[in-house]
Length: 368
Image (cartoon, rainbow, N blue to C red; front, side, top):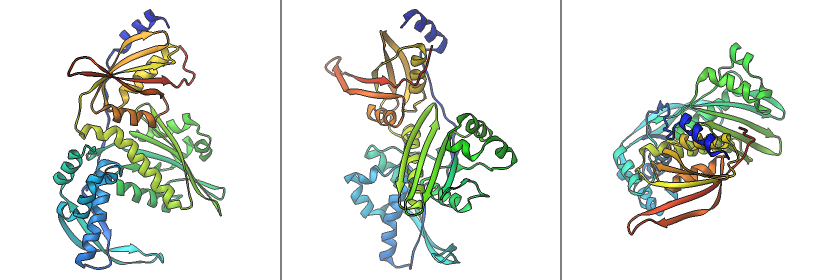
């Protein structure tokens, strides 16, 4: 690598990269409404516990907290966290498809108590400002393929909307009006024609782009093939299940987890930790640019600067908004860096230590 060229490049780029994100205001984060059969005290307390589980997931972005022993007693004593509740009667579609009156219990939890519980146990809090996600999805049932929109697949829209509402994830779908139809074909989603997809997405200016396929085959079940893009990051995964509902729930749950790892950190207790990260396989200028922009775009990272260039290894100094474990979890979800070895901790003095993370760059053919 040419150190002179890198030095000139760093002057042009600036050594420090800061981050920012737009957001949508999500209302009723601490309110859960569930159907009930009656107004008995025993059932009400049971529903309190289920609603409390849901609000913890919605506020933290995942079910990680519920797997902690520290939350076993709060779930059992969930009534302590209830601010108020009331019964309401609403029209609801029954299992037979006919609408009828149904009793619901609407529960408002105390925001401060829930947030204190999460903070005291070192779990993140995902605030009301959340990124909006545009979902561009093809829906393939026994080789009949449609693009998911309000006009063509209203039931699928309803499933996705309900899952997103439950987790507090703002979503929107293409209108598929004449302008959209001129920009994108269903085959573009299946073959991942990113230029056409990006052109359509530009019309909606989302914070997050979700590209996916839901495929169902008689006797074979359902599958989802997903890709999430935001802040120069890409997350890909596949999921199979016998149930269409399970595939829908999984994509929204995984989306919420990814976004919470990124955006919930602003509301989490900040550590201000600094560490060094050495990245190998940095064979050209494009590699340095890609990695510096990638790290700078992670919301857990406050600042990033290059401290050393040696052969094909670049060392960065990162100042974090959270801890190193949160950074590692987020990197694991991406496809930019691959961990080479466990973190190393070196003593700088009797009271201070320096953490060093080692990664290799996943080369995608970037050239200088």
